[in-house]
Amino acid sequence: MTKIQVYNTLSQTKEEFVPREPEKVSIYVCGVTPYSDTHLGHARPSVVWDVIKRFLRMLGYETYHVQNFTDVDDKIIARSLEEGVPALELSKHYIAEYLASMDALGVERADVYPKVSEHMSEIIELVDALVQKEHAYSAGGDVFFHVASFPQYGKLSKQKLEELRQGTRFDVDPSKRDPADFALWKEAKPGEPSWVSPWGEGRPGWHIECSAMSLKYLGAAFDFHGGGNDLIFPHHENEIAQSEAATDKELARYWVHNGMVNFKDAKMSKSIGNVISVKELVKRYPRGLLRFYLLSTHYRSSLEFYDGKLDEMRRGWSRLNDAVLNLESDLPHAVQGELSDLDRETLQTLDRLERDLVAALADDFNTAMAFGFLFDLVREINAYRHKQANQHEVLQKALKILKLYAGDILGVLHLEQGERDGLVDSLLDVLLGLREELRRQKNFTLSDQIRDQLSRLGVTIEDTPQGPRWKV
RNA sequence: GGCGGCAUAGCCAAGUGGUAAGGCAGAGCUCUGCAAAAGCUCCACUCCCCGGUUCAAAUCCGGGUGCCGCCUCCA
Image 1 (tube, rainbow, N blue to C red):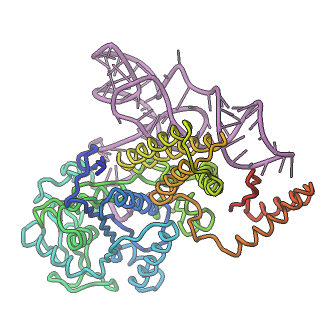
Image 2 (image 1 turned 90 degrees about the vertical axis):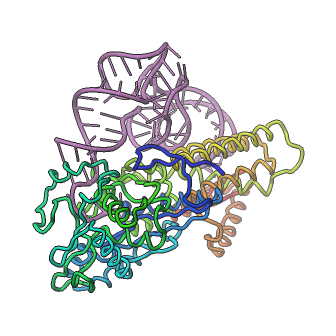
């Protein structure tokens, strides 16, 4: 099986990926806190993990992907009080909105989407276990994790406990033993959703849900733990402390963090308010283009968004799609027979490019590099076609590679099979047929008029030696 | 102040020791009724700056400068 290198935040180096169980990959990706519309920043890890999963399965792995919804949280409660909508109703609405946005981006669903509100007993059990093992203590109705009881605290974010104590910029809860301790369980305040626990009515702190739910669905030492790099501290650091203190086993083997999406020189963030919602974006741009944009930079780098960026990227993206259309329209006219030297050379180049493509994706999921090879392939096959060569085997192979990598794995191709409307197809065929007749009669005024008018509707007509063709 | 990261052509962006992928934009040519698509050619002697290591550095080390993220909710 192809060896995969993956950058592990824990070791700060690329490591060879060896799964916990042969051929099975367990994945936990931190999901969203559903209290407002899904934005581009959320779309990035989703699309990145979508591609990683598809690639792993192409290599023969089985994937099991868990992604949580933190549906019990301060922000949700605040929002629910503002709007007078029950907290769980609010989160339910935004969970649906999130899933719809991901569907629109062609992101395959996770295998499980556990919610905090449905895992209270697991969370309480885990907190209790930490109290029993004296890694946590209750103070009034709150329970805190005692960071000093976990000597490895800081191993993910490379923070030193002493620095963290000094860096505290907010008022420290006086009931904490150590300013760096964090809440596992919070005592209920009037009007807030709460659950019964050994420490009284309350609700979970922020990090504990991921520890409890990953343990339940994936067990200890699962393969990939993912999320934005803004989660490294404190969220993932605290998850490690809780989980590993409780189980005495490693939480996750490979920590994979994606870079931020920046807009107007700052991280796209709900609290800053510089967000672009996925809902709006998918109305204005094809999903394939959005994915192309999100994947054209390596997942660990930060990614800039600005008005007009997607329009700028559109041409390059079209080149990829046009290559597929060109091959599809050439294929019916292709010949089968003795291979020429050119055919053989081209087949060899295609083979090499496919190997390069796999190697790029296997090297820390380098999608940006993969696009480089896809464009190389496009140039290669276009040049081949330009030489009037049309061996079926060659065209077929190029098309197959494009559809597999640009289509099935990266998911950037425009219209998948079956997404075109049959009636529209037929109507355009009629219109194009009439226009051909006009062109034969050299009535270019009228034929150009048809082309211009369709162009205004977003339909592009191309006249090729094999006849006219249209695309959206 | 601490921690992590980044700085490559007009723009986007790969490349972590062997002499700068790819895309967009731009220039010229070919094809075309015109256009579109497509092809060919050109477009960074150089990778923020200054030192160092090496036969060899964009890549490693040291020091600057600038930018981003985290240390508070965050993908």
